[in-house]
Amino acid sequence: MCAKTSTYTTPIPVEYSQHRIHFGNAGPLGLSAFALTTFVLSMVNCQAQGVTTPNIVIGLSIFYGGLVQLLAGMWELVNDHTFNALALSSYAGFWMSYAAIFVPWFNISAAYDSDEELQNAVGIFLLGWTIFTYGLCLVTIKSTVLFFGLFFMLGNTFLMLSIGSFVQSTACTKAGGVLGIITAFIAWFVAYAGVSNKDNSYLTITPIPIPVYHHRD
Figure 1 (tube, one colour):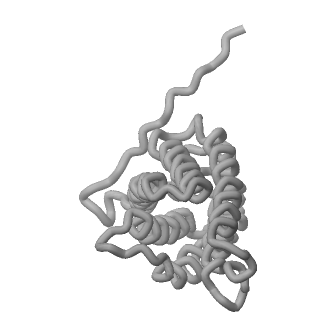
Figure 2 (cartoon, one colour):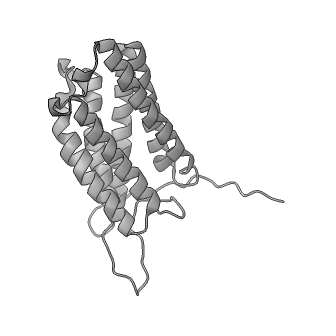
C-alpha cells in the first residue's frame, strides 16, 4: 500500500529529480488510517470486552479510514505511485462503503428481508475484497517481507470474515478479527518505517527485501 510503483520496495520517501517539485510521502498517513480503523473493527470482531456491535467504527470508517486514506491515495497518485494510489484509495472506498451498511440513511440493511440474506450479501461483499486483496498481494512478491505480509494477512482476514458471514460462524469471525489485528500492527510497523529516520528517532527500521529469482536462459 505504500511501495514505489516500479519496484514495490519500501514506504520510505522517494527521491525526485531536481526538475520536479518535492512532495511529502503520503504512504505512512494512508497506512496509519488503514491500521487504526482495521484495529478497532477487528477488536469488535473478536468481541473484545464484550463489544459485538460494530457501530463504533462508523466514524473511523468515514473520516479516518475513509476520507483521510482517500486523500493519501490521491496524493500518492500525484507522486506517480500508482500502486500506492490504487491500494489506499480502494481500501478507503471499502471503509466508506462498509460504514454505509450501518447508516440508516442509505437503507442498505433495511432492504433485506432477513438477517440471513443480509449476512450472505455481506459475505459476497467481503469475498470481492478478498479477491482484490490477493490480486494486490501478487504484485508485492518482489517487495519486502512485511509489505508482502501485510497484503497476505489482509487477504486472509477478508477470507475468514467472508466465510464467517456466509455460514454465520462466530468462530470464523473471531479468527478474522485476530488476523485483522495482526494486519493492523503490520501496517503500523510499515508506516513507522516510512517516517522514522536517524534525525527523529533512535529506533529506525530497515526493511527486509524478499529475494528475487532471476531466470537464467
